[in-house]
Length: 342
Ligand code: ADP
Ligand code: MG
Image (cartoon, rainbow, N blue to C red; front, side, top):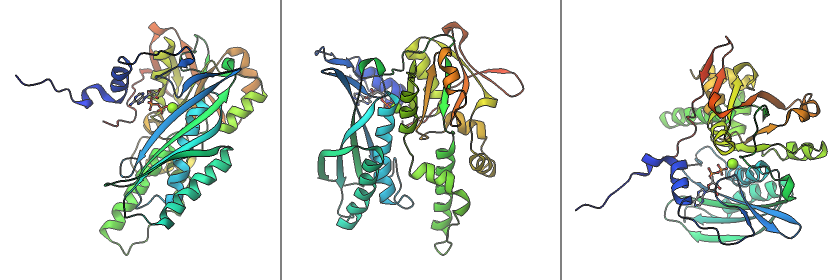
């Protein structure tokens, strides 16, 4: 009799995490939230700590033929800070673990840490430890971030209520379009090494791919305004996929409007140049690291004039489903294509 073998692709990334979560038993009352949100939440005296970790692998998450090591270091920190921001917490410490092959010199590691240290400075966090080991493959970087907040300030994916307003920060789709440009130029270079890639025109999109910035600025601004979103997460896998997460965790539906979706001019033009549908890039592009959150209607007036927060739709009853209303007024079912790792 052959043993049963299930392919990971049958479950997908989120299915696999759910599967693993079903085997986990929480024993400590201080564990406020375990697996299932952007970060875990842990009791710490009069406040709570949040903890999140992300793993970046060369050739899976970054390509050193076009990503400078300094940017890779910055990004490895920023993507974790983004998950701390998504909990409405303030980041305080990080640990950094690296695996290196002998392809890397001390100067290369210095370049990586230049980016890591720049991110620590930028987000006001301390690098407090990590681990260093050898790798037979490429470079591996794992960062863990720790943040803190008052328990009532923590925002989960599960708090969205019917009639809440769906908000996103910044603009979307740029990181995916940037990746396509970098990949295209890499292929051109490989085919003809004498060709110098002309990336001048694309600095916004390539910058968003290579060196994203976590939206701690928005977290601080909302604190000053006394706003606690009812739910929040960061957009790492694409807007549509993240809306599905919020809806599933909160037991609600959502309607969003195509004409409210924020896209940068350069991202739009470059998507068209690449024969990509700009709206598909906004809905399904990964790695933008903007924030998706919901607010109670009573807080709308306080954010209404904010130039970098966009009100893209609202929360509905679960039976109303998840819809995108197109510019022509047609409601189409939202699909969560997202960023597939498997
Ligand atoms: P994000 O995109 O915000 O980093 P993920 O989709 O990676 O979140 O993870 C969702 C949740 O699953 C988080 O709570 C994360 O800690 C948890 N998680 C992911 N992978 C594992 C794993 N291998 N074992 C336990 N928990 C995991
Ligand atoms: Mg996240």
